[in-house]
Length: 377
Image (cartoon, rainbow, N blue to C red; front, top):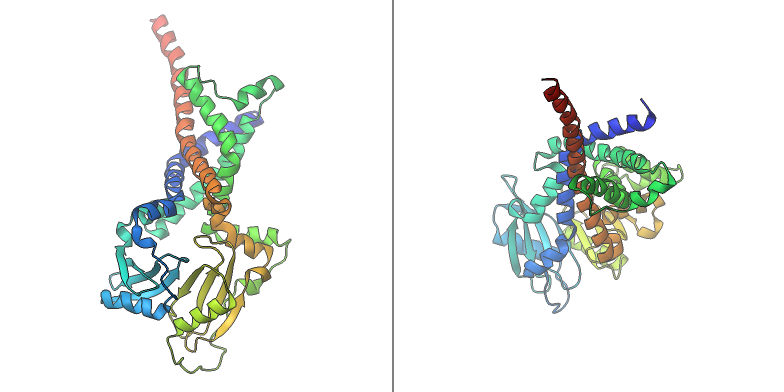
């Protein structure tokens, strides 16, 4: 068996194994790409008029808790100027909810069950196929790994043998029979989208697998490691702190506003244990997740323990911060999102067109045998 025939066999069987999962993950990723734009168009409560100074997070949490007894508030986000603060909540049954609260007036604008939210369902489909996370991640992760191999083997198979074949390898012969058109769609579109699809797949794997993330940071840092960037400060070694005179989440907020001036979006997590630090993130731009300062606070006193500003981070840490924006195309704005959307759509089409290529060849091989059998009779 020649090298190219071996690659073809590998490409075929890996595609048949992972095709359905790749189709669902890619298509759901394409749908999720413009979630912020769609939400802003159909969910008017996400945007508010700026009428004064922003209210403290404790007051916004108190509004949500008062309106919905029996729930707890875990964390909240100030998405940016002119946008409603999002308070993330949970009930005793394990349900997840969000309350949109006007950060200028303190009035609740909308309360939503995330289990019924369209884009939350799409995200869960994308990440776990709507299965329990512990099960779904063991299906999606390997399928995406296989898809990376498929992209590499597909490029090897696409590579033209002769110079005269190069033009045909870059164009789709629209006037040919449907099988030929489908073959060209699989090969030509696969080639054009390979770079984008590979980037989306690898950034997705960085979210799923710690070893992929560690490998990427190790290479980005030139073989050096910076354990302090991934290790939260220990609370047990600190002396017992006196309780803060005010809600600690307000102290977190005030320190982040002071130390990251001009940053549009803030994420604050309520303390969950006196033995673990609370954390917050300041993002430079609204609805962008790359340029960020990370904070760790004492859960009792509210004292700042560690601040990791964007400028002090290693190249590998910045790459990890950039990962989501790379994955969704956010890093390049609307143009990047369009490219990610088209790349995801083409990725979803590849298992379908590839299956049709295999099915067509399979049936084509049967016809001569059937004809020979009829002639012998």
